[in-house]
Image (cartoon, rainbow, N blue to C red; front, side):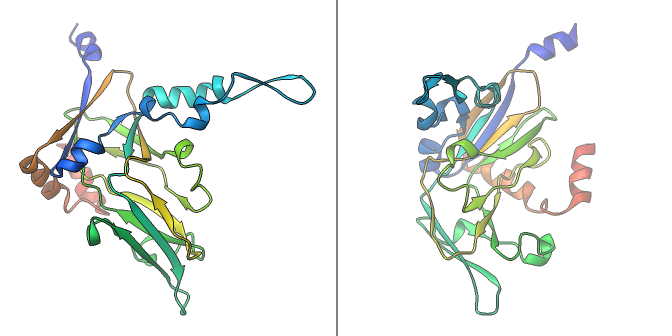
Length: 236
């Protein structure tokens, strides 16, 4: 009986930030609110020049289920990134943002065994949101591919799995082409989609709370690249 009641109880993902403008204008929301315009404009069946009916993506189960069962993490600020190669062949990047120096950093190439080189520069976006769940739930993170159609040839966001009971930061990784061409992300634009690995209903609750945000940031400070620390957290 207890397991039946538990299976019917929704899971809540709490999203905390200490930035009120982010809380107001860049909330994590259901992907169904971010269906791209090109998809909305599709007819279910398109006539071609020979009048043979062809079905379109309008009825694609993979697309529909993704947008029904996932959540979008949007960009929280306008950001322009330009990556290039130095005279010595080293990847470098520059960016412009209202957040100044608190948005983008990068891992050294040795940290990922020089993969995707030459041609790409690693970028890490430092997010203002921190997530927490009471349940031990894994989330699959994928790029918001269908919303990023103008950028897919310039940048790729690697997939990952996270668990917000054990760690709380939401730094997003990407690799940007080093062709000295600016890539512009607009505030409110979908960046990644989060897919909960559960059959239970999931609710997202965004909260403006400075004290809680600082607490979760402190807990997550020593998490990155430390497998032993993460395993220790999962055993608790």
